[in-house]
Length: 209
Image (tube, rainbow, N blue to C red; front, side):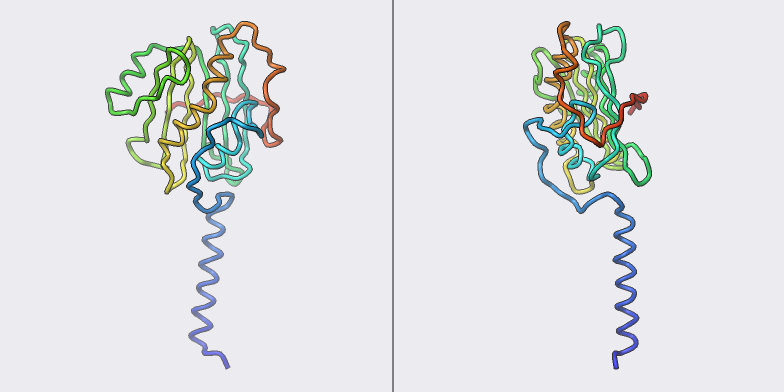
């Protein structure tokens, strides 16, 4: 007959394993694969590569709401993409495109120790950094170029990944399309990539870091 203490230990181990699985919810084990270097479908919010979102948030099949208005005349907000976990509807990633702001804001980030972004679009200036508090592995990237301001705000990152590198990589993927086309007067919305099935046609307000 099996030893009773052994049975109790095995039962406890099973309970702990199940508990850990429940806590993970829709977040898979840590994947340290770098973000892709080419923006490829499927997309969410019309232009954001789903694979890159899943890697940097650790959330598979996230909820995504929003779109980008690449025909804006620059006087209005140009769009936002909000990515949430399915389990608790909490925001994990917010990508915001708006009319250009003063470059002094970027210079202030750099003076405070942020890392400069390369010139992703001609004449652009940008910065990226992790949250100073370190809470939720948050990281942010901001790029000013050709009259448009693009922000990638990772509100909840994956522990064990380089979260700052992730927001910089996402910026490199999406900025050439979003910033360049947002300023092009002949931009054709019908030419944009198809949204993935996980995206919902709505445009909630963006959040501030």
